[in-house]
Image 1 (tube, helix red, strand yellow):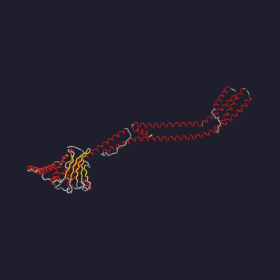
Image 2 (cartoon, helix red, strand yellow; image 1 turned 90 degrees about the horizontal axis):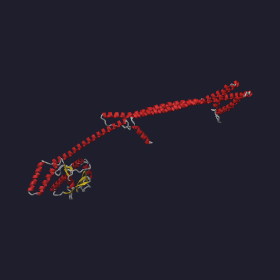
Image 3 (cartoon, one colour; image 1 turned 120 degrees about the vertical axis):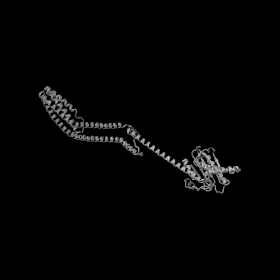
Length: 500
């Protein structure tokens, strides 16, 4: 049943406005036609019943007149004995017999029907007597026809009285029926008026519903158009289920609004993304500037320093001091990389080379106390990374991890690949870090240490922030420590492999 209703609704919504108007008009006309047919049939039936009310009285009057014709024609023949009078008698008798055929002959409890049966029986006896009278007259049996005539006259009078009495009874009964029929006719008139009023109201309602379904979306479309004209594109869409002309226009307008809203949203997203990128670029540039400035604070005329270091290396080579020459060359490479790469990306190979130089310098200073181990996948050496990310972490591991420990300090550097990502692990066996401090470092709440002769000025926080901005991820670095004297491991997660 629901499926049929849904199909009917779909068919109705699919109709054009013109067809809907014609359909409503035809439906209204059909209802009016059906009602008129109903009223016509019922009114004619009621009129027929009213006409039938006094038909029995008319029949009884006709029966009474026909009985009188029989009596008169018989008397006239007895008086004149003419053939015309005889013919009139037979005609009157035949008509009276026909009228008697309408009367009841069955046994019944109805007083009126019982009177009809008695009239018919007496009439049969009366006609028998009149025939005998007519035959006696033709046979010139005066005594017999006079006696029969008197008997016929008595029966005539008695039947006539019976007919009049029955006529009066029927009139009373028919009058009551007439009143009932008259009331029914008036009731039918009231019903007909009520039906017509209901049809008019229903017609008005159908027209209202149809016009509302057409005009309502147009009104909403006009409101939305005015709002859009004012620059407000956040308007509610017009809900239209119809597939007519208004429905097509409404859906096209809604699609247009959605397209405009999507276009505006894309513009907003693009602007937000552009602003975010600019902001990140500014932050990144700020970190790089910060790193550069901090480093430059430790330098006095870098070119003069490079030239001086190169001169010292040449002098050491001339004097045969190979270890001094190697130390000076590592110093020169270390400072040259700091100056050259501060605003550029680097490869893992360059970053690890810098760490090697840094470890060599420190081991010369501290008589080889720092034990450095490497496990590097050579296939990953050309991966691009932000510059100056490994040396600050190694420096942090030395200064805050293995410096001043009672056991042999070891720094391990590993570069390996899992799936499509590259991991860089810098691990020490130093004093470790408390979890609260790790959380503070990851949230950027640890203040950078003061610059000293033992630091290049680029702190761990700077490295973490630059990595997050560079890869646009929060999980790009991880700090792991099992607790006091359990060492620390810092793992850098490079999500995408790219080559310089």
